[in-house]
Structure formats: structure tokens, C-alpha cells
Image (cartoon, rainbow over all chains, first blue to last red; front, side, top):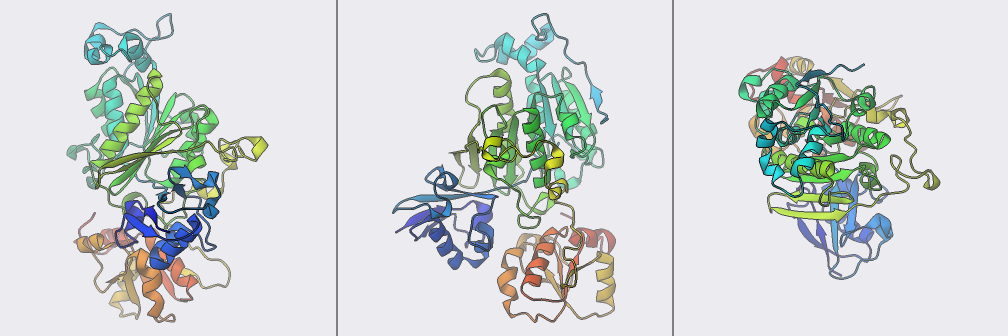
Length: 91
Length: 408
């Protein structure tokens, strides 16, 4: 299943500069794991050592915060879009 | 008691609770008076408003200038910093002649020039847990223009405790985020991001580059949201996070829900609302994460050793045997570097170090010492035993050892 993943520039730099990626997986967590395998330096920035989401990176599945659905266990289907929103602090 | 230096007269209230506009002001604000959504009453509400800006930097500059020009009666400004040459690329409150002055002094002069009707309360101090509530209490709205996570979480928590809306904005490189947090029934910053990242995981403060115009865009959005809140018009960014990406020039807003379990604004019935005073916050939030952390390991485990730039120079001149690794980005490396170092950007350290000799000493530096501390932790986790961090990074090196290097 092809899921589109949208990365902000701060994370895209760790994925060979790709702001939009295609990844496979049946759940958001599986998609994240597949990305983590592909881009090891991205992995530590998008999920913790236990494979769970950080409290400072929010995942949106088609505009809906996955914390309101099933978190990383949220089911994704072909054509879904996952957007990563990390906390940034610059001013 | 935190002392503010004040400039200008506080607006005097008319019997209906809003200050009058004199004829100079009516002329000055005529393009507002022509708008149905503002008009004379709206302009009087703007004059009656008290807005606190945390930070007179990249975001605070455009916010302060536009809110002053728009006629906000009382502007508060908190900043402990002095104007540095590297600020001028984006912090348009300050000019070339202001380098070395307190930002609050420089801002006062500029704001007075833009609009002498504004009453300015300048707090030349760091916004911290000791003064946050006292400073914010007398204002209606806070504009978060800080440059680090510790102050952002403090601003959020103080605003929630006092029930003040927060016109939020933040920037990184070419991207920004904006929202309104802490409005009645709306989410707060912790509903979105429960906790800050650990120091070093995300570049902070002076370490990250930023396109100079970007804070102009985001700070101006914060100023617009502030005026909308004052006037009660339109749809403020309550419950929405605006994502701004300027390379592709896309704007997108995503929903942010209030979280009943949120430690700041949540409900006791759901285990939220546990932060009932600023003292209830974890201690690490009180530290400014820009600061270089001290030793991070205790006990008998291998520890990260910290040396100063001067000590590093001494060890190089004595021919000590170690690998000097620069964990900054290639663009920074191109500006200035310490002779003999090799470049391994932070994001690549974990994997690049796979084939390094774990028994050999590795000395790490970055710009100010935060990223290199993060790299040092990673090396310790991988079993390196002799890991040294240069505190203060190349900034200290340039100041104390080799002033000929280009500052940035």
C-alpha cells in the first residue's frame, strides 16, 4: 500500500532532502518503521527507542491527529497521507 | 518586584471604559476607522489593549512594530539581550547603530518613533519562573516570540494559569508555525506538544540558520491574530496550527484539539491540569536549553568530559593524540572551522562512528556546545569511553583562541 509521507524541511534533510515520500505499511507505525529502515538518521528523530511517538513530534493522518485515533496503531489505506509536525522553537 | 521602565502615557479611560481618541489619533488611524470591523470603537479597544511581547528578536520585531503602528495602547516587551551584529539580518526593531545596546532600549526608541502614542513597558530581564506571572498578570494577551523551548513552555504555562491568550509563532530555517493557544475552550501548546525535546536533539537559538524575512512573515501573522483577539473579529487561529513553508510557499492549517489530559490546561477529572503553579513543572523546564549543559553522567559510568576552547588549544599545541570532530552543518563549516578537525554533521554521527576506534579519544565541538553534547551522548551509548565536549564550541574558540575566525 502506498502511503504518502510529508516531512518538514528540518526532517527532510535526514531523508535525502525528500519532503514527500512514498512508504508502505498497514498502520502509521509500520509506515514510520519502514521510513526508519530506509533513513537511519531520520529514525531517531521521528520515534523513540521503543518505536513509540515522541511527545514533541505530532503525526497527522489525512489532517487528523493520530492521538485521537489509535496512535501508531492507526490503520492506513492506499492513498492516505501522513504528515509529521515537529516542535520547533526558533524566534 | 520586576521593574519596568516606561515610556509614554497610559491611556486614560472614558466613562464607558474605553479611552478616547484625540484628533491626531483619529487622523493617524483613519484607515482603521474606515473598516467596519474596526471603526472608532474598535480603535478605542485597540488603544485600551495591553499586549506583552516575550522577546524583541526576529518575531518580536515585526509584531512590536505593527502593533505599535496599529495603536495598541500599552505594549510590554521582555528581553534580556543586547543587540548583536548577527541579529540585524532579521530583527528589524534594531539598527546598525544599536549594536551593543540593550534590545529593550533600542526597541523603545524605534517604537516611539513609529508611534509616540504607545505606552511602552520595557522589562530588561530574562522571562523566568520567578517573574513570569508577575509580569504577565497585568496584560491581556501575550505574543510568544522567544527563541527556545524552555521559555516557550514557560510562556504557555504562565498564560494558561492566568487565562491569557497566546499569539504563538515559531520559525526554523525556511518554515514557521503559528497558532493562538490558551483561548477559552481552545487548546494550549502542551495539548499539541506535551513536552519539549531534550536539549541537543533539535537545534536551538543561535545554532540554526533562518531566512531573515521568515520571522517578518510569521511575526506579522502573530500581530494580526493579536488584533483579531482584541477586536473580537474573524476566526483567530484557535484550535488550528498554521504551517508555513516558504521554499514551496505553501500554507496549510491543521486542527489542534484541546486535550483533557493536558498537564497545563486539562481537566482534573481526566488527570489533566496538574500544573497548578509554575513550581509544579519539571525542573528541567526551568533551564534555558540554549545554555551548555554540564556533565551529564553520574557515578562510575564513562562520563563526558568538558574542556574549554583554551584547554583544547593547549592540548593541540602539546601534540595530544585525539580525533577532533566538528558536528556542525557543511554551511557552518564553510564559514569557520578549527584546524585539524573533520566534519561529521550531528545527524550522521551515529552511523559514521560505526567504524571508529572506540578506545580512542574523540573531542567534539559545534557552534555553542549543545549539538556536540548530543553527539557525545550518542558516542557514549555506543560504547566509546573517552568522549570530550568543547564547551562553548567554536564561538568560545573564536573569542578566546583565534579571533581571526569569522563569527556567525
